[in-house]
Image 1: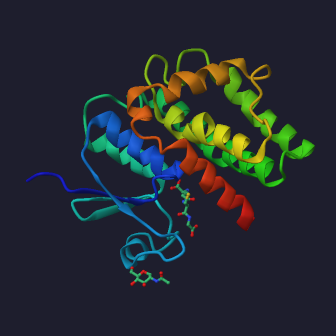
Image 2 (image 1 turned 90 degrees about the horizontal axis):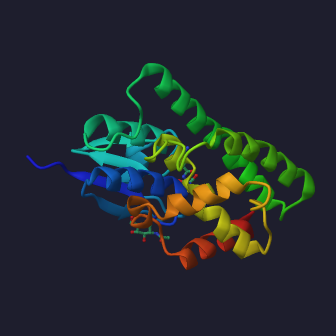
Length: 214
Ligand SMILES: N[C@@H](CCC(=O)N[C@@H](CS)C(=O)NCC(=O)O)C(=O)O
Ligand SMILES: *[C@@H]1O[C@H](CO)[C@@H](O)[C@H](O)[C@H]1NC(C)=O
């Protein structure tokens, strides 16, 4: 039986894009079920009753929620290019840094933009970004190939630039973060990533809407 793979989401969401990149890396065909976040489908609420958030991956009828959990699931189920290392310690490190990107950097980015680049918010973001800058010693966080940390940081590589454009401010300064800046470039030019990113205008529009609501 062929696998049935459905992804509930909105293509402009960086969280959904994480799942799409993992599927593309593994060469898995999937169907994107577009959700309207102001009027969530009964399926979404049924599949993810706790958070009611996208993305939700539905594999042969089994729902999986939370983007990082989805990526690990994809890596476990489909062979091919690995997204997490095999070694237990290396894997723990990768999970740690993915968590840092998600728990520390993502909220700091949001605060920096919501405050329209307020000095203290940007300084706090820079403190987090410096940890990543120090971690980057290869082409990608994963070395020669992208791993869970790279995929988790997708929003830094693409969404931050779009938000900078939408608000007319710079938060990821090229001179302060040369390695991260280079990484952004390498990462968005990676084929599986390039094929997964939504059009830039759509992301800029998504941000304008987000900040209007905030
Ligand atoms: N921790 C979640 C975050 C996902 C998330 O924030 N999704 C947003 C869209 S970008 C959402 O579904 N928002 C709808 C809501 O919160 O009602 C993940 O990594 O999957
Ligand atoms: C919400 O979505 C349902 C289908 O899922 C549709 O029938 C209904 O008209 C929508 N309501 C609004 C206010 O868009």
